Length: 552
Image (cartoon, rainbow, N blue to C red; front, top):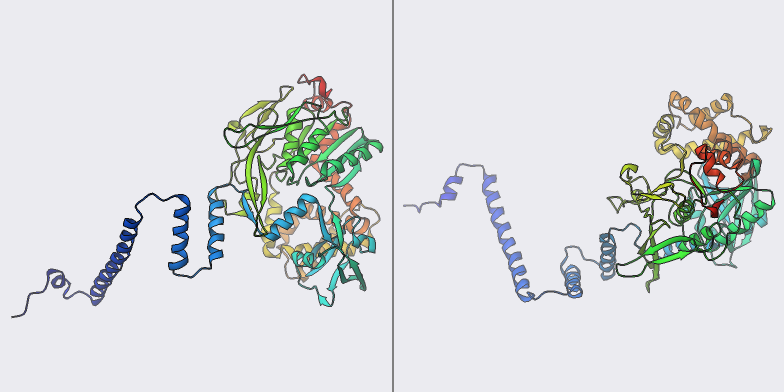
């Protein structure tokens, strides 16, 4: 007589064979799990004593190095450990800087690099000179705006990107590079000796109408305060009776230079910024150490969503002390300070060591985006925005209300926060062909250059139609209705490019000022101001606050 089957197998008789196979698989999986569990239990018995941080880390690294399913080089494991540690700090401004990133940071801080001094963009697959840097080897040799870079040595540059071009042009001071440009169908070759090239922190100094001076500060590098001081002196000599300081697009830089710039406009003893580091440590307060340079000069400061860090220190200090009226869009909101620690690897650690506060005690730090691994979210100042209704309120020296917790809010908000719907539709229609659109725009401007009679020439419907036909030939044209809807914006962009290639950067700037709503509003406030306090009176339409004597 056959031995009875176990109940589990008896129940399985008659079922599909797959079920029996699955049961065996589960049994094997359980067996494997038991073996894994046995190893874990043994390890636990051996190491029941509490682990110190270093010992725990060493054991984890050893286990990964010896037993992880994919073999990893020891240096890779430590790189990942460093990345994980910094990521877990949940601070988007703390990071490890590899050698190339550290080099770029040093160039930004010093404002100096070694090369031939060319700013290029990619047009129709070729590097094209946008501007030779003033005082650099290229400008001295006669390289011109619009030159198409076709050869470096004997190598064609067709298909090169900006980074590749920049790398080829840079090198140790004293070394040489040979390159060839196409200039209107004629080839011109240059052999230049690389030299130190200084990127000026103040890119533009201009006397505008009604005695309003204009200075554009684009970075806070080692010489920013000195360059700005010289620029303001020069525009005052030209007849400036008031001043616009443009910090739009300025990402910041050295905190000390932000303090030095604020000192130029504040009185001795006035506070500029306060740094607070770890709990229990004493705050570090920066105060003005010398009298104002231009105490009677009315001042407007322009900011936008890309104005960050040291730009916000300057705007915040001048706003808190009622020394300048701030116009534009709410700034980025970076209220922390970092220190760079060199490492033996050749890189460096950029570490947040303090948070800073404006003179009236405002923290303008914007909450970090949820996904700190998303660099675009970190760079986008709109990633996390607090409504004014829940932002803390403070009072300036004169009693005006200012906000903390999310950037410097201008005294007068001016400018579109979003692109017009027609422009957004055009951007969606162009998609990955946006580069081809820019190429067509530049080509059309070049074709119009010889026909222009003045820098303010209008962009006619015929010129716009020629641009559209250019896009058709390139097989990247958007629907005609989309193009026509965005035509006012397209005409403006094309007009700027036409003026730049025909009459130069200065003429281009003056044309842009006519369409710059923020700058135009600043000019209105400043053109009748005779004292710093007058801009606030003009803004309110009547004397609304008792401005301290220090700013009268």
